[in-house]
Each structure stands twice: as C-alpha cells, then as structure tokens.
Image 1 (cartoon, helix red, strand yellow):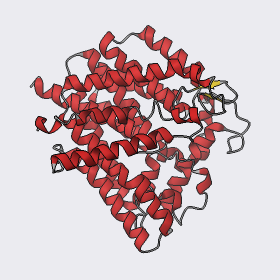
Image 2 (spheres, helix red, strand yellow):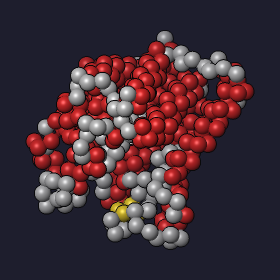
Image 3 (spheres, helix red, strand yellow):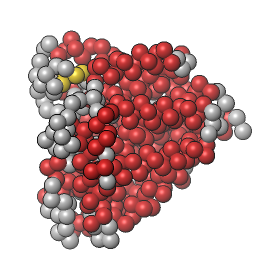
Image 4 (cartoon, one colour):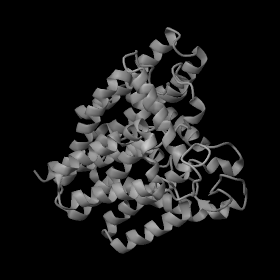
Amino acid sequence: MEKDMTFKIKNLLVFFLLMLPLANLPQLFNLGEDLGSIFISIFIFIIFLLWVIFEKKLIKPTQLYNQLIILIIAIGILFNFISIIFGIVDLQDGIRVLLIFSLPKLIFLYLIIVISERVSVGQAFNLFFIFLFITLLSTLVSPLFYQLNPIPEFIFYDGNTRFAGFHFELVNFTFSLLVGFFIFSIYKGFSPLILLVTLVIIYFLGRSNAFFPFVLLSLAGVFLARFRIFSISRLFVLSILILTPLIGFFIEFFEFLEIFALREATSFTLEGSTLFIRLYPWALATEHLVDNFFKMPIGLGMLGISPYMEDTENLFGGTGITAILAEYGFLSIFIVIFLYFYFNKIVKNIFMINDPNLRLCLMGILSLSLTYICIQSGFFNLTAWTLCIMVHTISVKLTKATT
C-alpha cells in the first residue's frame, strides 16, 4: 500500500493542518473572513481529482473505525438528499449546504484517513513539526502585516485588546498554540516551566473563553497518560463527549462558569455575557435534538436551515458535537457510542507506548483535539480531525512495533 503514496499525496495533510493557523490571512487583502480555508479546500479538491485520475482507483480505509467515520458522514449526506427531495428544507439552501459543506467534508475526511493510515511514524512527526513551525511563524509575523491593513477583527480583536494572529477566532489561536506546545515537547521533553510560560502568553494575548476548558482537559489527559490510568480515562472521554449537550440541556444552571470567563459580564444572557453567547448555541441544538428526536434526521450540516429551528441567528456556527447530535436525531445515540469506543481505542493505544514523554504529549494533543471538535464550530473541523487521526496512526504503529 505504501506504493500508493508515491504521488506524495501525504503532503495534502499539511494543507489540512494549516486551515486554522492561516485561515484569516485573506483579510489582509479584505477578501472576507475565513476565505483562506475556502481557497485551501478548492486546491485540495483539485489535487484529489488529479490523484483519482492518475491512480485510477479509490483506496479503501484499512481500519474499521475509520471506515465507520466515513459511513457516518455518508449516512448524514443520505439524509441531506432526503430532506431536499421531500422539501423538508429549502431547496436552494439544502443544495448549498450539500455542495459547500457536506460533500467536501466526506471527501476531505476520506483523504485525511487514507493518507494518515499510510504515512510512516517519521512522516507523521515531520507533519507535526510543520504545523508547529507555521503556527509560530504566523503568530510572530502577523503583527507586522497588521500595519498593512489595520481593520477590526483581523489579527487584533476587541479594540486591539486581544490577539489571534492569522487565526480566525481567538479559540483557534488558543487551540493551535497549546497543540504546538505538546508538539514542541515531543522533541524537547515536557517542561512545566515552558508550559507555564506558554499558558501565560496565551492567557494574556488571546483571553478566550475556551482557555480554561482546553488547559484543564488537556492537563487531565496528560496526568492520566503519565500514570496510565485507563479506567478513569474512559470516564474522561465520555465527559468530553457529553459536556456540551449537558450544558445545553441545563444551561440555566451553569451561570457559575462565569468565574472562568476572561471577559466581564453584566448578566448571564446574550446581551450581557460573552460566555453565554458561546453556550447558547449548545442549548439551541440540544432543544432541537430533544424536540425532534423521533423525526427523520435532517442531514449533515442542515441544522442552520432546519424548519424546526426558530432562532438560527444565534447559532453562530458554534454548536460542536451538539449540532451533529441534533442533525442525526435518534441516530445520535449510536454516534456517541461509536465516538466513545473510537477515542478510547486511541487512548488505549497511547497508554501502551513505553516512552512516558511521547505518551503524555500525544495524549495532550488528542485531548485538545477531542475537546475542540466537541465545543467549537464545526464538529468535522479538518485540522482537529487530522491531528486526531494522525495521533491514532502513530499510536497504532508504535504499539505494533513493540508487540
């Protein structure tokens, strides 16, 4: 199978990894928010077509869990077609979601999986290093480019009081730098001092509401990996998976989370709290799930145009795993079960790695990526899933090499 990679198709993983660190770069030319990811998506799609033409075949994922990920997306797209054909969603909006969101996610996740399964451990680590290098480079040089186009919500946010580099949104900046720390630690060793410095920098530069969830959950994962506490790690994975639906269902009881908010609030409402703005989409998606649980699923990416959703303006795209659950309805039970076993399988493989430093660093990356795809806009975020699947590949291959 390695021969199938002679096209250097593995280099496409670099583009998936760069979708966060460089997503907002086109704003330098006033080309619109997040246009970088769109251009990269178009480029990847063209390369994919060329690859299929030259190879004259599609490569089947080898791992069962990866095959099931593709199947879940395909089932969601099937319901997309059903919702469009039977007029459950607006025809034009449904086709737009299908072409711009759902089908590209299927193609790109397929590419990430088949490529990641076939890269060597050394190649995977090199790709990690490239992500670290680009993240640091974009962070360091972005203030210089800001002077060329000093517009709001580009590099600096909220009246130049917060910083995100070329990332689109501060939560992405926080995520990338924390992942970068763990990648750096793979090569240089985990250092509590460097971690502290990194956290101080991220805290004061970005001041994102996602700071504490990312830090607490990644360090919890590191602790479990360091001492190989697999029994508690199962509960750890489950807690991340159900965290946002739980908050969404009982949002009025989570006002106490304001103590972790990095920006002041006047009231726990859309008008008075930036934290509530982050949590409210989870409540909307959870309400959609509960109210329409036994109805036919509306399909992947269709939540924003669902006829059962009245307050779509306040979704803000930030529904994470709750959007997937709402879109799949009663099938979401099976999705949560699958994700629970999928991520626990990765954790189990990581815990079998003998090198304690590598073990805790991979667990840190996995914990951050799982947290990101569950709480942030776009459950199928391509950068986060690329990191997850690459960690899976590394852990599987290192485990096989030691048994």
